[in-house]
Image (cartoon, rainbow, N blue to C red):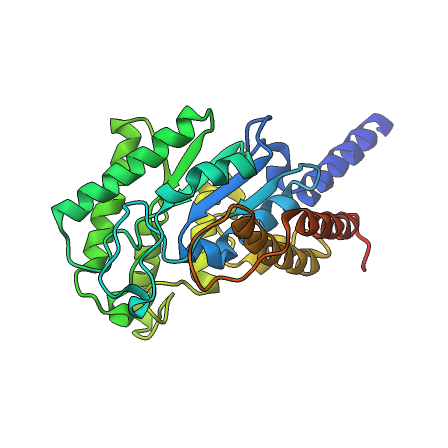
Length: 318
């Protein structure tokens, strides 16, 4: 009888232990040598909330892992090298990733790259084979540059474009075609591609059936917090984070930690500071951008924030 009671107590202990620790804590989200993770993209990446959401997920669900998430998204940028006449009211053309990629890679030394392009690459006009070819050429160039540097890359399909709010009739179809081509490269060229476009499109369409005013983006382009979470969620699912499937917000996601909200706030602040520091350090050429802190100074501040986050992960309140 005593043996049976002991076995029951042991079983209950392990049952409670398994429910107290997120299942993802036993997984390995990235290969062992991956520590510095770079995000390339345009203004949606520069806004950065989906990057913050992804970092917050890994910090709160893998507290013993050490990753650095580096955001160098640059507003207006394309990988196609195209720019429409009168962009930014004629003040400057769209920046081209070709101009800065080598400097970014040399400075950040990433172990893994995520790349999100396409939204600007059709320059908000109806479908055109010439522009499509420029996009494909640019994406292929980007892929080869990263891979030839010995770095794995995961391409992201562009976020959804909402014609109801953004105008430019027919542009949502352009991004459908760009996304389909990217997804097709998984089989055609063995690329790694995480699809955020079509899940966002389905989410938008489904919610608009219930609420005609529902939207991710007031301007049709730049997603709100929910849109960024949908993006982050699809990337996390691609990475094998199955636990995220039924989570509806980043706030819910970080609640796995007692101090989750404070951790999320600090990660967001650090990301806001570091993205400008990295852009300044890598000498982007786009006008009208924030001047970042010198990278060494920013890294010191980031390290101090890291210590605060570590304390919060241990259950302490600041």
